[in-house]
Image 1: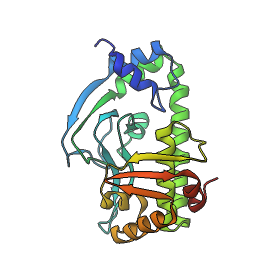
Image 2 (image 1 turned 90 degrees about the vertical axis):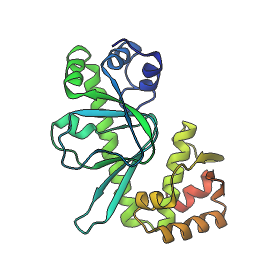
Image 3 (image 1 turned 120 degrees about the horizontal axis):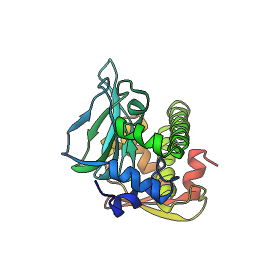
Image 4 (image 1 turned 30 degrees about the vertical axis):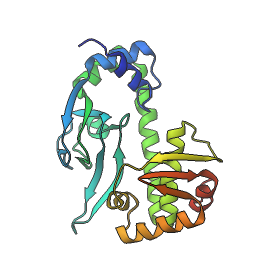
Length: 234
């Protein structure tokens, strides 16, 4: 399959493949295949065999686990440009979470066999994968810390802060206002921060009254400095 210039560009904006040169990204692009999913579709389940990694190109995918008590914990949403499904593909073990399409969308997949061929021909991909996985561990540690130690408004502030900084392309952004489109329901947001919908609704009202956020028709304007103060993030 010939390299798609748009795919090559998209790969350059991902944490996993963004460190690679254009020639390496073109090689990755040639090995990828497009798949589609419908809203509510289970893309894979926890415990399934994992042979592919996914790169979302359109839509949104919820990554979650279901506890023995039947409670769902959502720990991430994969949006366009986000890679997911990497753990099982890298180590050959079972899937560690459920992946469910929140909306209709598409993704590019890369099989384990293709990834191994790329590693042999493009050894710098191995270093990129290690850096990517280390970043995943850091993110997981931060999320566990937020759920265990911070009240709901603090967790929400951290979520909005990270989203705003990601959109602006400046992870060290510490002042100013950034607008983001919150393309999810309060129920989905509650799953992400480990709280009930009513408590999230109350926390959103608290953030708005403090001036940390401003809500209008699904669009959130974030005051970076106020959110940082509430979240405890320096």
